[in-house]
Image 1 (cartoon, rainbow, N blue to C red):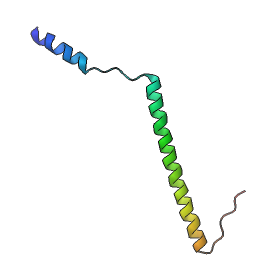
Image 2: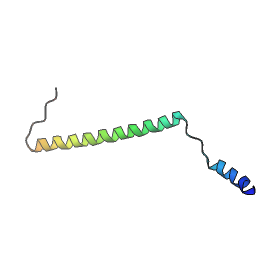
Image 3: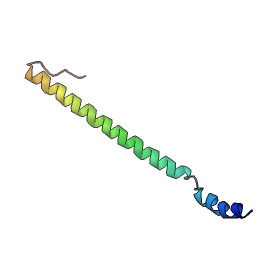
Image 4: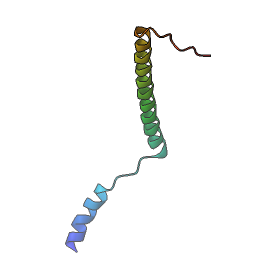
Length: 65
């Protein structure tokens, strides 16, 4: 019985409250925004490298409508 009385407060202290919906939403939104910015930067760098290669090879830059 004493073991139960000693372990019960420890078990209750180990339990944490689950984060609120708004907190989880904000965290996820920030993660998605960071991933999107990283993807945009990678795409931009790739496009700049491709355009630089086209110019050095004497090719014209592709026309966009």
